[in-house]
Length: 121
Image (cartoon, rainbow, N blue to C red; front, side, top):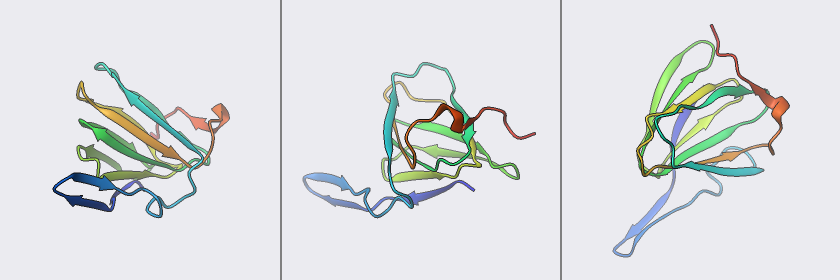
């Protein structure tokens, strides 16, 4: 089941520093980010083995999730919010603000055979 963790952030008059290490519950093998998104939906899949951690570094977006039992929506609108997605979590990102930068940390390197595109019924 997908869930939000709040990343440890150190703030003072100079700004904010958010820490990733030791907070993501899996070893990170791949990092990518999405930006400049129009009104399209992104994602639309789940995985066989890959765990993911998603953070909207700037702007906001909505992640719709379906784990086969429960459908939920998560609003990622703060770079301290991190959405953990398990392999069974079919997810789709949408409603990106024009300034959004959406970063994903994945437990595996890219493998096209790891993707399942059909949503649960």
